[in-house]
Length: 270
Image (cartoon, rainbow, N blue to C red; front, side, top):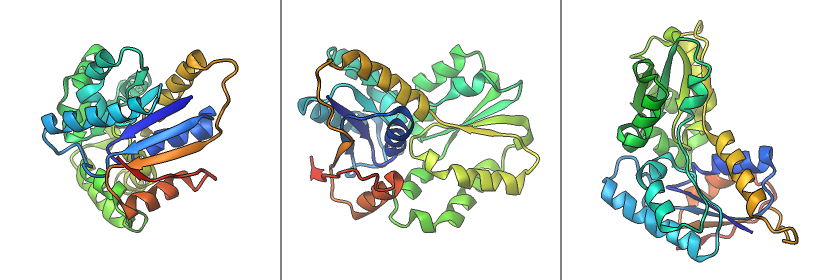
């Protein structure tokens, strides 16, 4: 069974890591990172939808099923159309873990950080509306975190990252918040930076930082168990990484994120 993962860049590796390390994903994996067009969040929506469709078609054509759209922006823009187009393919989308926060927010506020496209899309707005927490949620664009995550020297830029996070959070009284929802798959790479900043600017705050990786991974494993044939041979932890543009930074960062899990990487251009 071939499992496809797609993201604008390397953020989806946080979902893949969760699936492998904590949910037991043990299949032949194809990870497609659109290094040519990342980041999506600040680009024209019509252009982004076009490249998303091209990339998902690539994964379908090589036989991937299920396919995880491990990108909140791509999910917001295209998941419904893609499911309509590929009715025989299980397409698993990504959405901010707002429900997780809503179920436990204890009458406090929730701060949702995502890309510019995601925070203005109806999919997220409808999610908040349907949970009846519209007046308790603040939606904030944090596009620069995507660029930090994709940079080759990301691990050396902690102070710069934290200054950016401070700039985002300074407008909010953090004592009033129970959760910060990381609504982009790149953002979990900076959980410790968020904790450092919160501890510095408001140490009395009691905030949980949540993302959607665990829920997505569990959903993926449920579908794999449904689709897998009893006599199917498992090709354990073979990962083929496909990029749309050569990127040394992507390769280095991918290995850092996955900790070189004895996984095999095959970098190919789309």
